[in-house]
Image: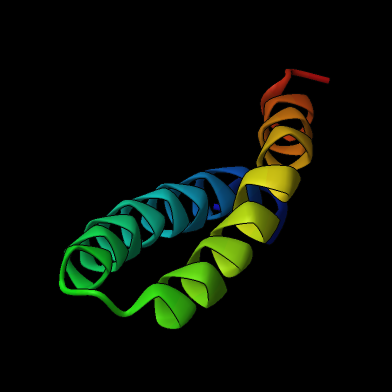
Length: 69
């Protein structure tokens, strides 16, 4: 298998991992927020916004890479 053939599926798997981590972090942030740590939750949601902001570009880029030549 050529290295170029591995890159799109690798990026897809890394993207899925990123989404799973974001979901887990969001659950933890909710748990922390329910216990009154408002500043911490604000910081966590700020970081999650960055992930959300970049997600559309990541999805589009992976889709383009997976298109046949």
